[in-house]
Image (cartoon, rainbow over all chains, first blue to last red; front, side, top):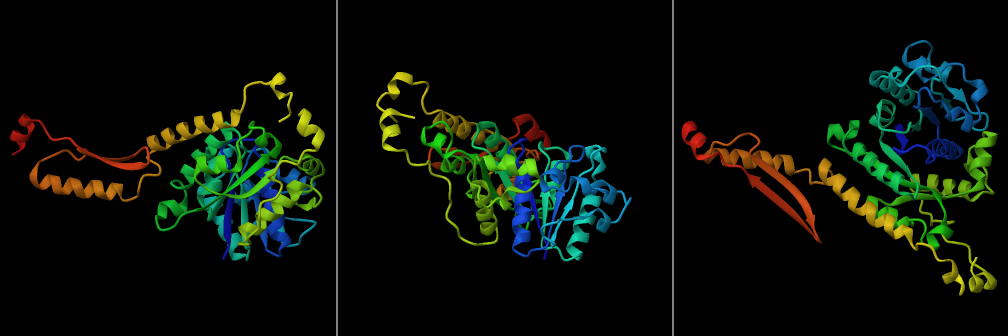
Length: 270
Length: 92
């Protein structure tokens, strides 16, 4: 059985592509056969984060328009042989995607024995975002502890429960997971940032992972190595925990408490 | 918190302000889109309409079924618009 996982958020810049790349790598690392698809037609970026931008020959839109086979367009990852990337088109517009075309590609991946297809949604709630979520079995809603991101996430949760194939069939639901990114425990401690439980309470859904704000994320995207592979960084370790939880493991949250202050800074502030 | 913090106090605890604003806003937006309402509402509405129509000839949209929150309680609100005397007599 192939599971389609959409990574979505509504708001842009919250970490969807970073998350898609790390989740896909994390699943492949555990031996799963994984395809990760960039649905952001016109603004291709997943290839850069995955570090395969020089190897894109054909893209998702080419496959949908029968200009090449799916096999030709799937880029095999250099690190994990069960991991494939399907890039977005850089030259076409978002109308180049069709529901039938997306369905055909997903069915072909399922027939090819893929365990997971990770769909990296574009920001917004237009066609690309709609198609990325339509066939989903599960959704990872990426949210920052910030007002506009939380509000947009609630919109997306509403769409997941009404505008997806599962919702329309009426007999099952898309399984929703919340992933809190750019979390800064020190700012939460001083009351400047909403906490995990604040966001969970507002949205009425539990987090599957909390990714701390980390220098590792920029370093990873600079070098085209998904941050989950940076085992020294807190973000990488937190992504690894999140993947384990997605697969049913129980793991306690890490990196969610502010570092303890020394005596001096406690007395004099800091 | 250090003992000299009072010297540089700005507006405190904006996170709780954010949480309060979002809680109100999202509840309103969910109410407006009918989200979070129980899935039996459309069926309940249809059956109520059938029962009422056995006795009174009302419009197809005469029955309105809504839920909303009142403090800790969920309130089920029914409103049924009966036809005015003239149309009722005319259709009888």
